Each structure stands twice: as structure tokens, then as C-alpha cells.
Image (cartoon, rainbow over all chains, first blue to last red):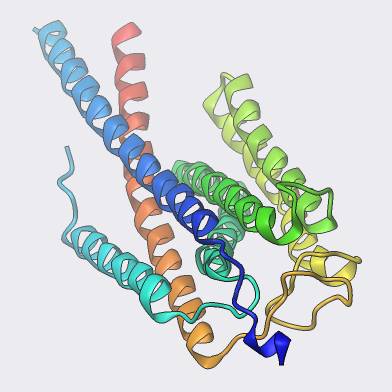
Length: 56
Length: 232
């Protein structure tokens, strides 16, 4: 009876921490992709402009 | 500049919706496990992250074979992108597993066969990037890393089967548990639903991230070509 009445362990803090790590890391990776994409677009445009100027 | 494809926009939307639903299911629908309490819910995304890690490394090995057979740069770009995503998700799986282990095993880390093989797998794929940065010739780099991705894939089944082959405290959810496994539990029907939904969601996340990362890789390739043209 004592076993049936036993409550689950109080582990909510670890649960929240686990989800913060999982979702936070995915979000950070998406953010890094976004930054790298925009930086690369900028670099590509600059290089294209230099290429056009050099052709002239 | 190539505009974002319509199909990628749809995939972005579907992935975000699936992630929101999966998170909602884990928080509000999945039952609280009788002994471990709320922390057991980490399991849904922990396993899904590990699945994405292994799937990514498998894709990297397959495209490695395709690169060696056809020598087309796109296979190298896909391989690099897949390994990058796989490494991120494998690290997520290890860290989230460690957080789950703390209240259940009473330790953040133990040199259990599953944890050890996962760590080896992570180091194997971290070395993939070191290898890439150590070779200047792009064709040689692509060839070497394709071979490395194929050989490195040996660590993936080793990690997957470690909890089934060796004496371990890490639970095996699909298949039989080792007698000494702690934190194991029987999945109810609602737990199984959330588990498989999470696996599907994370597969979508992988596909979406892979597409974005490959687009970035192609753009970076164009930049390198343009730089080479300007310096010549």
C-alpha cells in the first residue's frame, strides 16, 4: 500500500533544464545559420560589385 | 542570388508547427512517469535528438559514397551539412541525457558503454572538421572527408547497439532491457504516441536544417569561386 501511495519524484527543475538545453541549442543553431547566410549574401554582393568594376 | 524555394518555405512552416505541437504534447499530454516524475519527459526529445544525430551521420556516409562514385561537389556540401547537424544533435542528446541522469542515476556522468560510445562518436565527427580545415586543395579535402565519413560511420551502429550488447545502466526503450538498467520504464499508449510524434518532428527539423545548411554551403562555394577568379 505504501508503494502505491508513493508520489513520483520531484524532478521538474531538471525537466525544465533539459528542455531549455534542447530547444535553446536548436534555436542557437538556427540563429547561426541565419547570421552566416546574411553575412555570406553580403560578401557575395560585395565580391560581385568588385568583379563588375574590374571587368570595366 | 537564388530566392528561397516555395517548398522550403512550406517545410519551414510545417516544421515549426510540428515542433510546437510536439512540445505541447510533451508538456501537457504525455503522462508523468510514476517513479521518475517530470524529468522522464526529457526522454522524448533526448531520443529524437540522438536519432537525428545517427540519421545525419548515415546520410553523410551515403553521400560520401556518392561523392567517391561521381565526384560531384554537391555531395560534399550535403555531407558537410549533415555532419554539422549530426554533431549538434548528438551533443544535445548527451547533455539532455546527462540532465536526465542527475536525479535518476545520482550523477551527471558515468563511463557506461552507451555514454562512452556516444562520446567516441562525437569525437570521431568533431575530427571530421579538423580534417577539412587541414587540407587546402578542395578536391582532395572532399575526397578525404568522404572516405572519413564512411569509415567514421562504424561508430554509429557501435553506439546504437552498445546498450543492447554490453552490460549497461542505460535503458533500452525499443527491445529488451539489460537486467541492470536503471531508469527503464514501460511506455503506455500515450507515451508511445508522443515518442513517435517527436521522432517524426525531429526528422522534419533535420530535413529543414539540412536544406538551409546546403543552401548556405552552395553560396559559400560561389564566394570561394568568385574570390579565386578575382585573385587570379
